[in-house]
Length: 147
Image (cartoon, rainbow, N blue to C red; front, side):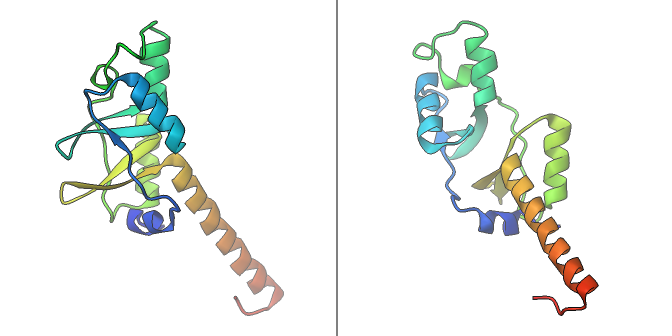
């Protein structure tokens, strides 16, 4: 299994998009749409204080009839943010996401935010690893040296 550090290196876009808890929800939704991401980390003075996701928007805004222009990010964000470290494995991340029904995990190193991985990043990694194993097995079965 690969570590979070190895998975992070393979990501094409390693940018971490953040927003202030005092921002309007409309600004958060616009940023998510512009950046093609499903979550933003909510930060205050470089400290992670929450995460806001498309799921938060759907459940805490739309279903409750709130206005995106009148509601602050702090009002819908998830305050308890789970995170992973660089030496955690893909398997540990998948277990954490599955157990807690999450799709995004911030990556912290010495208390500093250094990245974020999504369930899509983890699935992509697993598929890549499985394809490599299949190729190696095919070479073994056919009696050819691996490439």
